[in-house]
Length: 194
Image (cartoon, rainbow, N blue to C red; front, side):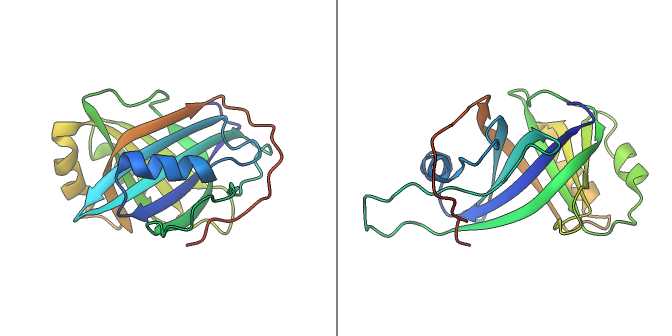
C-alpha cells in the first residue's frame, strides 16, 4: 500500500453464513471504481455473522455507492444491516498482504481521536498491525486497527484489547477477495437498505 491509498470500510450484520451472504453481496457491491481491490472478512458471535468489506483505492478515484441488480424473485430475503464506517487513510501499514491460512485478523474500532496509539502498538509484539485513520470528518470511527495474528493467539489479544478504550473488537477470517475487477456496465445507483 502506498501513502496515497485510502480504504473504505463497510460493515454488515446478518444471519447469513458465508456462501449465501457472498451471493447477496456480489449483487450489491459493484460501484464506480470500488472493486479494484476488495477484501471481505467474516466473524461469528451467537449465531450472528458480521462482515467487513475493505475497499482499497487511490485518493480521489472512488465514488462509493452500492448498485442494485433487478430482482427476479419476490421471495423474502434475510435482512442485512449495513453500516458505512467511512474512508480511512493508512497511518501505519506493517502487513500489506493477505492473512495466511493459520492467521486471523483482529479488528479494533476506536471512536476517541485522543487515544494513545502507542499502547496498541506494543500490546502484541508478535503480530503485524495496520492502523487506519479517519480521512473524512463523518467517519464512524477515529481509528480502525487491523492486527494479523496467529489464530491460536487471537482470543488472548481480544482480552488484552478489551482492557483499553475501544468501541468494538472482533476476530475475523478472510472469506472473499476481489482484485482488479472492472465493471463498465451502466447501472442505477442504489444505497443498500439498512
